[in-house]
Each structure stands twice: as structure tokens, then as C-alpha cells.
Length: 265
Length: 310
Image 1 (cartoon, each protein chain N blue to C red):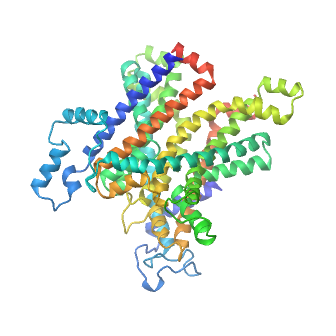
Image 2 (cartoon, rainbow over the protein chains, first blue to last red):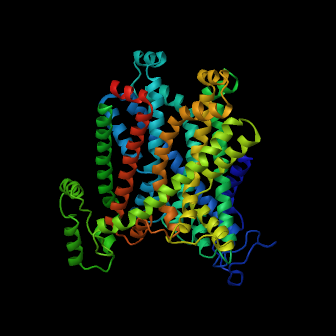
Image 3 (cartoon, each protein chain N blue to C red):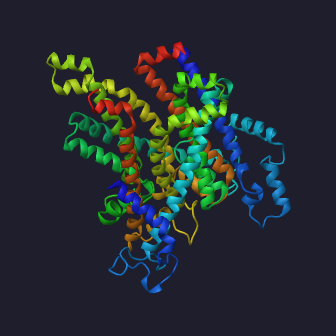
């Protein structure tokens, strides 16, 4: 089921531009019209078809999620790995920087950054990456700290492998499994954060659509057209729920401890 | 214990110093000239020069930073560009509302999380467990900016039980607190479940059962009490997330707190207020985390010992 939802999300987002959709076409006769056999999801306050805008919003959230998770994952992994491998002063400074970033609760720093950088999808990506790299850095640092004294790493160093080769060839690949689990949950976080920023008016700007900005528009017409809030919210919840379920399964499959616990070991 | 406290306070002070530097830098991330962005394009060069001087932006960066620290040390947070009032005064008016909301949300979270987590752990792999954990999964997957409007629609508009928005009495607190507390309840209940399951497998729990204690006493006195430690840590961490989430919840319910002030200030390009709000929330988070560690150490002597050895 989670894969079905995520597959649908990805297909709609990627194939959206190829479909005969008109997310910006205004039909004054259908303003706030509810769901009907002709338009399953109804129309919004400007008479634009909600299904078409939902697909446009899916594209926004998928693009932002993919960009943020990839960029912050790579950045965080490299910083975390080098921090643990180099040790000493480097490590202490990087740990302090990580602590400072972790001192900003939840989405707060992203809100402030996105607010100051100005609205727009690019700035949303920058703001979420600025916040997102920290979790990956901390995870990979902890993993590399436990790996750096393994015999095969010492062997690689003894054979004359350079710092970069040790980190990229011998250390980072072994941190991939937990990184993948973290990234999966990261997707859920980024999808919610992007929608949240757009809800606050700091994300994509009209006439582009985001599920968050659709919910914000919908709250103003909640009494007469509740479908404007329900449709994008349900889509958002379905995707986040699916990603979280997938993350849980991945964690169960990859986490050695819980795997042995399951088999009674 | 005193060594542990001092070390922890010094660590928190270092982090706060870093937070101040980052918040100070925020204004310099503005694309283009921050003064022009704040005043708009219609401002005269004389106005711009006056604001630049008032904010100290005409001085070298290190000098600005030192002045920023100095002002904060004397609780001089500056003046709002929009209302021309001292920011400290504006914040003082807003803090009680946010504190009330965060406190009520934390209470909702704890009241939901413990019964759910305990039921799930005690009835592991049954319908109760799946139901509780299903709720938990749903709770972390529903964003508060969607849950808030849904609750308003159901309980304010249709049923008329609570006011739609604003801060007038206890009734107006219920929906925002439930909105903000649900995600925390979801995360906490999972933590309570896993922590309790781990503890219930320990030898001393088997001993407690073997000596004939009632199941209720085994779970509450021997199980839950020892399962509390990781839950306390998570509670502290989540209190911070709660403060971050309060920003959006306050906006949904027109709750007159620091979060709404922050969003208003962003839209008005009142950057000194933005900086002050971010700083206040983050420093509160650092302090809450530090206090959590103290409680943790107080509850678990092993942590104190580890702190001494570090």
C-alpha cells in the first residue's frame, strides 16, 4: 500500500506536465464548486480545477523533497564522515556547529531563513537544506566513529590509501543503510516542511501550487467549500503516512538489533 | 553532581553563543541590501542611511557582532521597525500566550501518550497495540496546519463547542493545544511502548512477577518507573519541537503568541523582531533541554556518575 501511494505520487508529479491538465485555467462559473462526476475534487475559489492543482502540488513537493534530501544527505554525510575520521579540533568544531543548528527547534530556522531569503521554491530548498544536513551529519559521524578502528580500515591506511579514499571508498558506503532509513523519514519531514512554509506564504508563489498553499487558500473558504481544505490535506497525509510506513519497514529490515530481536536472538 | 551541572551549563552557554552568532548573521543573508529590503524601494537615501546607522550596519561585521552580544547582555533587543516599540516590551506581551499554549499541548501529549503506550506494550501484538500505534503513526503524519482547520471545522463550526480562534478563556485553548500536542503524543507513545517493552523483559520484572505481585503493580511500579528515563529525554527534545510547531499552530488559531509575531514580522520585513523571536524560542529550547538533562540526572544516578567520569 505505501508503495502504491508513493508510486502514484511520483507518477503524477513526473508525468503531470504531459497530461492535459489546466491548473491555472479560471472558470468563473465553477468558483468553489464541489466534487462532481466531471471534476472529482471540485474547484477552488478562482474556479480552477483542484485535481489539476493537486498534481501541480505533487510536483512541487516531490521536487523539493528529492532536492533537499539528496543535497542535505550528501552534504551531511560528507561533513559527518570527515569530522569523525579527522577527529581532534576539526571534530570538536563540527560537533559544536551541529549542536548550534540543533538548538533551533523543528522548522523554526527554516521559517526564519525562508522569510529572510524571500519566497520561492529555490529559497525553500536552501532553507530546508540549511536545517536538514545536521541530522545526517550526526548519524554518519556516529557510524564512522564506530567503524574507524576496524581492521579493514587500518589495512587500507597501511596500504597507503589517502584520506579521501578511506572516507569515500571504505567508510561512507558502510553508513548507507542507516542513512537510507534516515533519508526515508527525511522525505516525510521535508514534504511536511515544504507544505508548512507554503502554508505560511513563504514557499511557492501563485499561480504555482503547493499542497500547503492550497490548504491555506482552503481555510478561508472552509465554511462554504470544505473540499478545498480536505483534498490537499488528504493527499499530503497519504504521502507522509506512506513514507513513514516505508521508513518503519526499512528500519525493521535493516536494523540488525530489531531483526535479531524478532527472531528471538 | 555539581561538576555535571557546571559542565552542562557551560556547554549550553557555548551553544547559546553559537545561536546568537547565527541569528545575528540572519539579517546578512538578505538578498541585496537588507536596509533597502526592510524600508522598501520608496525610501530616500537619507532614511536608508539613518536606519543603517541605527542598526549599526554601517560598521564592520566583527564590531556589529560584538555590539549585538553587548546589547543582548543588557537585554536591549532593539526597536520594532513596524510599531516603533521596544522589542522587549512586545515580546513580554506575547510570551505568556505561547507558554500557555506549549504547556497545555505538552499536557495533552503526556495525557494521551502514557495510556496509549502502556496499553500497546501490555497488549503487544493485539488489536489494542495495532490501534494505539496506528494512532501514533497517524499523529506524526497529520501536519498541524491541516489538523487545526479540521478541528475548527468539526468542533467550532459544526458542533459549536469551542471558539474558532483567539485567546479568550479555557475553551479557546483546547483546540490549539490538541492540534499542537497530538504529534508529540504520537512520538511519546511509541517511546513509552518500546521503553516499557524493553523493561518488561528484564530479570527484576520477572522476579517481581514471581513473588506474586499483581500485574498492575508490576507494570506501574517496576515497569513504567524504569521505562521513564528515555521518555523524559524524548519529552525534553519534543518540547523544543513543540515550540517550533507553535509558530504554525498560533497562525492557524490566531493565537497571539511569539509564533504569530514572528510570521507577522517576516511579512512586514521587520527583521529585528524576526531575530528576537528566533533567538527567544531557540534559547528557551536550549534551556529546556538543559533542564531535562538535570531531571534525567536527578532521576538516574548513573548519568551523574558518567558526567563525573567524562
